[in-house]
Length: 484
Image (cartoon, rainbow, N blue to C red):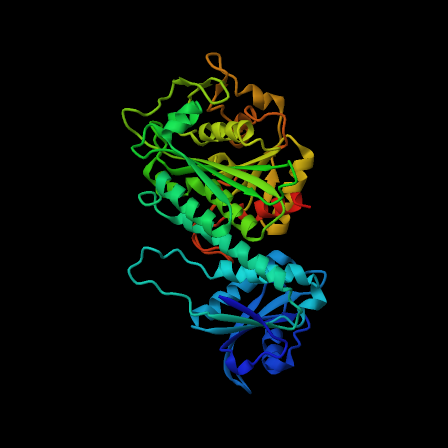
């Protein structure tokens, strides 16, 4: 999709137009009589988030029009505007529009942050123009080829940033949506290498022998039940060689999770290809950071593997070790993600010398039970670092909620036969996060559970059905903030 801005756009080229309308409902250049009629009928009043579609005969010919309500300066909300914009785009896409115009004229009266508008509009249209249909024999490509803007001075650099963020998020969605028989740990590693070469970050792949040499027993215990070999994926980007500071990102990379011997029911396994959404998030983030050439140093690690069943599988009741030397009692083989994460967290601290750590994972059903599918659950022991993450989520228009930490929850992790229990009971989202905390050294740390936000059961605004790419944009904005 190509974005063009021209104050004197040529309406004869346009087949469809998205028109911003505030609560005055005054846009005489787009059939004021129609707007007056639908306003009186209370069909459309210009309130934030409303849309109304029609075909209008204009001087330049018949046009498919979608009016988008932007409300007032008091009622304008970026989230509602983006959702309405996405809906309008999808309506015109169904009309086979090739050249699309977006008239932003009254937007400056309700929201005048031009850079934010520029980024959001390019990012949102790209995210809206996606559907996972890679394996259909007859794919229908989008007809939208060009998007033109008028009515607001859009910033080229912000449009570019939005486009990079949109495309990086789509790459994360693609990885999440790929079926597990195709996206094996090896395939994920290969795709990351290719993406790194294209984006500008370094990728190192460590095979099973190297993982064994690192004594990552917790990670290997999960992986050994599968015939697919684990792959430790290490990504490095050095945008500020003069700085010794380095951000560490760890993404859960279970390309498939059957639950192991604590097997999931069938309906719980169907979408378990998405159990590597944390990996998708950090890979997409690294691509966006590198493409935008942020002056920051970042290392990301993914301990990729499958959790399967065989005679080699680890078992409930086992006691295993970890790269950090701590022993772990296996109360449930379906609490596997935290086992791979703690070895990855130990590795990134010990061998990559990062100063701050963020882990992101589809970790617990408990996160979904507590927050649903609208917010990611966050745990942190560092208020200052959490505040940076909170603001990054806000900027990305992704919801999050910080869960409480009490010493009584840490007590649940203890086991009489081992240092830790991998299945410490309720509250599950918190005890799972605190299990990871037990392996974090004296560094700022944030844990993000995206079990509820990584996958959509149906289309919703900028989100298509399937993987959402949750976490890519917040982690990018975190890195950008740390680059200043």
